[in-house]
Amino acid sequence: MSSMVLVLLSPLPQIDLVTFDKIRRIVMADPDLMKSLTQATTEAQLFDDVIALGLEHGVQLTREELAEVMRSNRRAWFERWLPQ
Image (cartoon, helix red, strand yellow):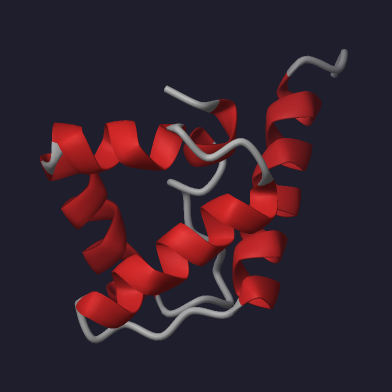
């Protein structure tokens, strides 16, 4: 699975969890969709794909929200490896 997709699968507190969980469940339940999303070679392409997926399912996401999710989740992943 693409690391870009992985960092989008965990929500942020300021993003509506019901909305985010709906998209996450759709992606996690469909191996073909997951594979399709992992084919994105840039963040911009991944964001476009996720935004389009959301719209297909009545969920509106913005590039800014997705970028914040990625930043936050990357930061959390790196911080796990720092000495306490």
